[in-house]
Amino acid sequence: MTTFPAWLALREPADAAARSRDLVDALRPLLTGPLVVHDLGCGSGSMGRWLAPLLPVPPAQQTWVLHDRDPELLAIAAEDAPPGALVETRAGDVTALAPDALSGAGLVTSSALLDILTAEELAGFVAACASSGAPVLVTLDVTGEVALDPSDPLDSALRDAFNAHQRRPVRGGDLLGPDAPSAVAAAFRARGQDVRTAASPWRLDAATGELLLAWLEGWVAAAVEQRPDLAAPAAAWAARRVAQVESGSLAVTVQHEDLLAAPRR
Image (spheres, rainbow, N blue to C red):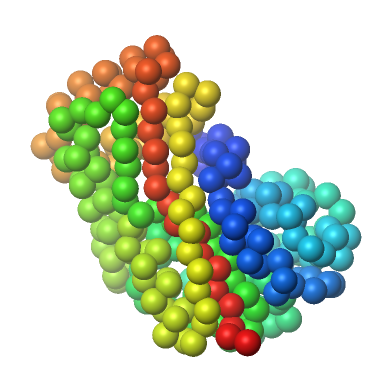
């Protein structure tokens, strides 16, 4: 079983390849230095490593404030921070941000975060971000769309079970899962923000075989947890798919969506 830090390291190149450069191009004119960036749910810090060199402000004029509830991940993110940037870490739950937590931010970011929030938690996230007055760049929230080539009759049942698992009840509400991209766009628009979105698909194949195998394992496990009746056919399906990965004949596209929200000028 892959540990969470190892999973984040494994997916980082695919994340970097998927994130929308078009939204970064739209973001650049909104930023001036010195720049304070609050990265919410920073994990191991991959967002900063990808984004810092793309911003119009030199890294030496960037301060990254890294928020996460996991001290181990915060330590990894701080140790491997964007070269030249100043770094501050804040341990805590990003679903319970204080009203002034993002004070002074010039940019707020998150990656692969919003689909694991409930609607109530998303409302708090959007309120905190909007109150900062800063543009917000969120990336890699799942849409629930997955395409496997070659296809298999069991694909759709596993996809639907996985998506239901992503919407399971937790913390007094239901996770947003694949509904997160539309929900966050609607929430920012309701606050009068300009919103742009862009597709950010993972494209997995023989060149990303280790990640593809890990993704398959997690996808099937979540689907079977949601629908135990799928356990036997899913095991046979997984064996076929692993063989295809090993032969280099399987390609998978996992759709995500990125969003840029900013106060109207």
